[in-house]
Image (cartoon, rainbow, N blue to C red):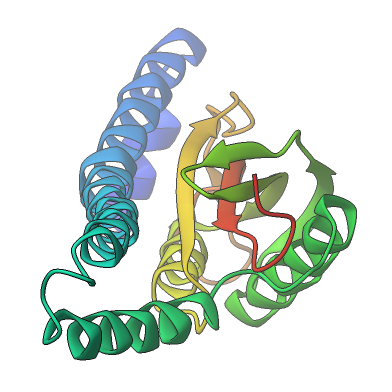
Length: 204
């Protein structure tokens, strides 16, 4: 580590800038391929499953009179759909659902060790027979905390989707020397992301 520190101090200002750019590109690439892409695939499968269950229920209702045994299958599907709906974002109105989603995400961010810089409720949108509320957040923290936040969203009791994640150039190109430790530590990242969830109420 001492050799790394000595090497860093021997670099010119422009060389440090280049090294910082390389490190920034590495962090952003690792963040995208290690967190965002796998989680987007997971949330897409989740939304497809919800849409498929809704379509299946509609088909079973249409054939119910011609197939008495379909009644039991419809009941089972409705029970499964009801169980899924219990994991939707609670709220009878878009404003109430967005407010509760903001509170939920702020709690996840806090327990993950992230600083919440801002939260904005975006316009809700139709998702089949339901509506989806989305919150945009700006957070600050290190990479492990961001990964913990993404995992917290993925495994939360509510069905939530991480729609986007963007590093907005708040990652400094300079390395910060920790006093008395001899370790090189990068300053925290600032990221903007959007998290959405289907609402229990306010159907389309």
